Image 1 (tube, helix red, strand yellow):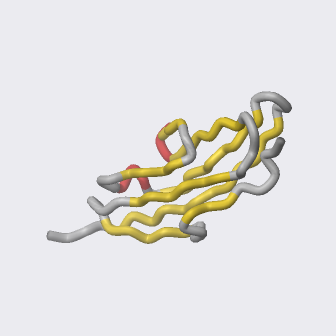
Image 2 (cartoon, one colour; image 1 turned 135 degrees about the horizontal axis):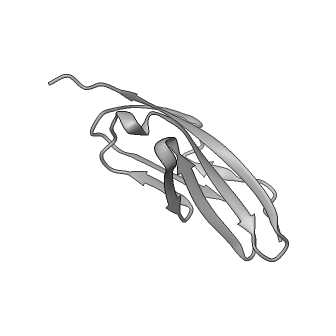
Length: 90
């Protein structure tokens, strides 16, 4: 039933992006009856397997964690992504 092994797509765990750009990462674990959520800096929370931020700012600089929980067996696993946001000068 899982979750046993969380994967990322793309598979990178560190991203460097400029301000106002985007990030799009999906976590998956092919498990049955699982829920997905992402947490990040400044109490950032998103439900679902996809981390999508379309207008990155300095507040998004840091570690994001995808948590996968099997609601039937109460098993949990997670994987982290580090986002380095570079200041963009006009």
